[in-house]
Length: 256
Image (cartoon, rainbow, N blue to C red; front, side, top):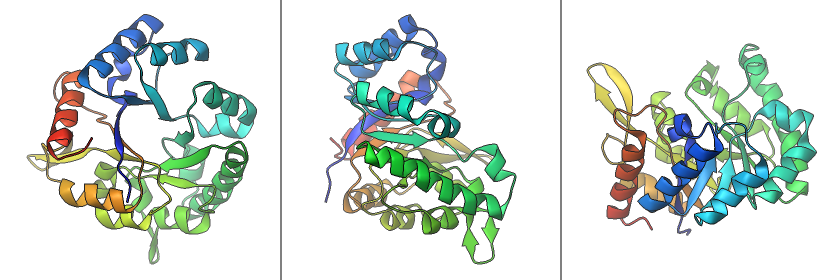
């Protein structure tokens, strides 16, 4: 059973990471909250060396990234060098690219094959490769969903999961069941809560919504997840405040 650590998914504060100066200020704030790790996602263009220097300055581990799938297909050596420089062992893509989605069921089959090929190259370099879901993957094709196809038809050695708790729930999936299904295949999970605003599902800070966090946390430990990445695409308040609320609530739940 694992004892995962907390990481801040920087997509939450993407409007505050456009320049190197903003990135430095954001990393300081994230560290002041208490986080010891981050997921690099949606930051502005800046030299990889500068990103690493700022992370080191504030003692923040880069535990995983979100990068473009085309980048991995077209310039895999650069991607490997980037992650080695950052001492970041995990690579992920944030969604299945549009050309696969537009192809319907066949697109899911093809993505599983193509992602396995990319993941093999990353694995050969000592890196993991994970897929981050939304809810569109819960479109059904007979008895299977798109997400079933992705994980059934990809090689688990080369394509792992970055389950997003909110989007699983949004798609009508069973969050805890999916986490358990990805045992030993998910180094990082995305924690995101869901609350109702009238008839509308919206994102909430961890512990402020309706997801079963005791059950989710226990399932993650059993699945040997290493990192809980806290993400909130849309915040109802200052996103740094949201990151802090989620962090504090998880600490109250006993998460280190």
